[in-house]
Every structure is written in C-alpha cells, then in structure tokens.
Image 1 (tube, helix red, strand yellow):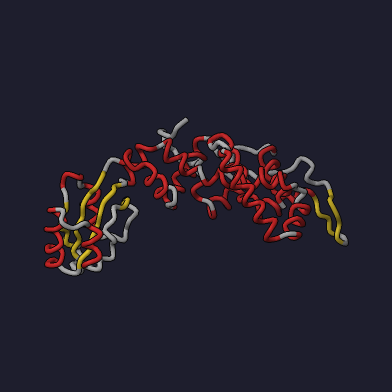
Image 2 (image 1 turned 45 degrees about the horizontal axis):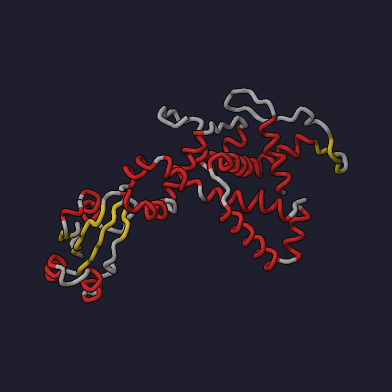
Length: 296
C-alpha cells in the first residue's frame, strides 16, 4: 500500500492539469487495459480514479508534510535513536507479522526506519519549529503567563488566607492544603486556551504584572473566590514551558500546518483531491488564503 500511495502521489504531481477549479488528473496512457473480468475491462485510469478517490487526499498530505519536514526539521541523533527503539519494539511485539508487512510493501527495516518512523518524528517537531519562527506573534496571540491560582468557597476564607500569603508566613502550597483548594498552589503556565478558569480570573492573569502581588478575585458566577498572583509575564523567561504547552494544543498545531503549507506554496489542482482535503483536512487547504503577510 505504501508503494501504491507513493505512486499515486507522483502521478498527481506529474500529470498535467488545467488551471481551472474543476480540473481532474488523467493519465496519458489511461486507456491501457490492466485486466479483464468477463466482458468488463479495468484500465489504468479506472485504477487511478479509484486510488485517487480513496487515498488521494491522505497520500498528498502525507507526502507534502514529508517534503516540508525535510526542509524545516533536522534529523537529530536523538530522532534516529528513538526511531530505532520503536522499530525494535515493533519487531519484538509483532514478530513475523511485522516482517510480513515489510515484505508485502517491498520494504526493508531501513526503509521503514527512514521513510516512516523518522519522518513521523520530524512531523512532531513542526509545531515547535513554527512557534520558534513566529515566537512574537504566537506569544502575543496566546498570552502565556506564569501565575499562581488558589480557589476558595467564599470570600471570608479567601480573605483569611490572603494575609499569610502577603506577609510570607505561609506558602501558596500550604494555604492550598489547609483550604483543600482544587489548585495546588504551584506556579503554572496559563494561556488564553485555559477556558476552565473564570473569565475574570483570566483577565487578572493576562493583564496583571508581578508587581501587583496577590489579588482577591470574585468570579462572575459568584460560586467561588480566587486569590491570584502573576509570577512572571515575560515569555522569554519560561520558553521551554511555552513550547511544551503550546505545541500540544490543536489550535497552534493547525496554525503551524497552515503556516508551512502556505510557505511552500501548496496548491491542489485535482478537484477530487481538493474536495477531499476541504472536507477532511481544512487546515491544509491554503491556496485560497489571500493574506499578504505570509513569510516567503
């Protein structure tokens, strides 16, 4: 199947297409008969059309991603080691079944390592590469802030806890345990994606500074009262946390996909593939975006 998918992708790239919106890929020798079933003939074009409709979109996306990763993501020794560890694990777990899979796809272990496992590890790093490339834009958009948050059932408890926090006689962790707060009192990274916090609390976090100290924040619903302290609002000071947090969010991953597919001019001409990607992989359909600030 892998070999077939690669063939399909190469055919899609090599087949001349008109520039119109409803163009379709056709093989020059598409009328060549591959086999017959009774009086019915199956041609190369028949097979190609079937492959295109069932696997065209996923194959094109996969191969385009590999091409982008080859340009953007360096293959490190750590990746090679991780890929080898995964390969050894597959061999141990699946034994002859895995060997049969390689044989059926006309692949060696080295092929599987270099064409499947390592590209997969490269793809995982693409979002981090995007955050690095667009650091200022990403941090401005997601507003990552290190803050400590404590929650209380009523204002009296929150007010009582505020004094020892302000004079330093108790740590936030100690106050959290004493009041059975759902937050443990440690400093954590918060972004605009943290929708589990009340909007008033998030407003204090995103707009506050470390100089503000502890703030008592009633919620809009009135069911809880929070104590909030902004510990650091300069993302440069906690870059690793920003990378690990944002690279795992779907919105940033989608932004990264759009960014790199636009950067390398990804364009679909075949209407079947276009419609399939529009339906199943909308983040990759970048050819109609007119934003002029995209990096060259």
